[in-house]
Length: 287
Image (cartoon, rainbow, N blue to C red; front, side, top):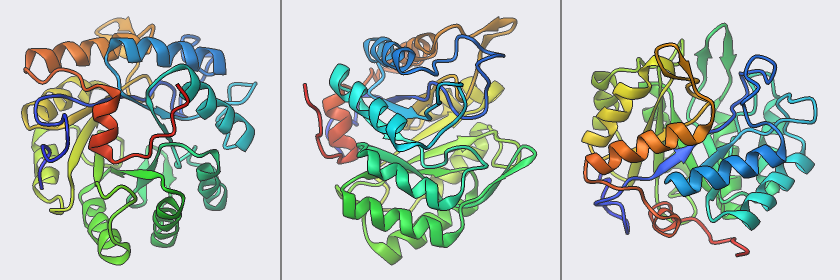
């Protein structure tokens, strides 16, 4: 496994911003970007700060998570028209969305989609990802030329990734990019030791990996990933506390800090063109 096998990846860092998620409420966090206008503003600001990909959960007019095609397609089209970001849609939705509806996310023609490699406890809920769903999503993404990002919440998910590749071959574009989502209650711990254990088990087909630290694991996981050649995902989906007693007011703050740390580590932020090469995505941009 190599994190340096694609253009631009050897000396630069892919920063993905996950601005909204499906868990937080607009009432509790009014700064959470939930409308299309807020998403476009957030995406534009985060691209300027160093992000090259955006991981989207969409909300309806009541700010509730939705997988409605109209909302998803409008967001994909708007971000593609007004930014150069790689647009990735979550196929996780919320933990309450039915599996069949989660597959319809691909109808919105994103550049990339998340593909979580197994069921995991998610706080008091269960994030359901049985083998049949994972397999169907993988094949449909291949057919629609959408690049999956494999989300790994636990070591067993690394093994499931191996099984997917063995069963269905490589994804569209030929690259395999994973994101370790750490510190979810019920998943792998948000510690450098746990992250490095998981990295060591990655299949050789993996061409790049990123890491996410939920909550207080945000900074130690970010530092561990950068030091080991990995990439980063940051955003209010994963963390709403910038420092003790200081709430995040805009996703740009988290991207700027990640970009600064990447610069200090002499792995500056990756351009959107280099991100497309790293991930093997189909260029659907209109600008």
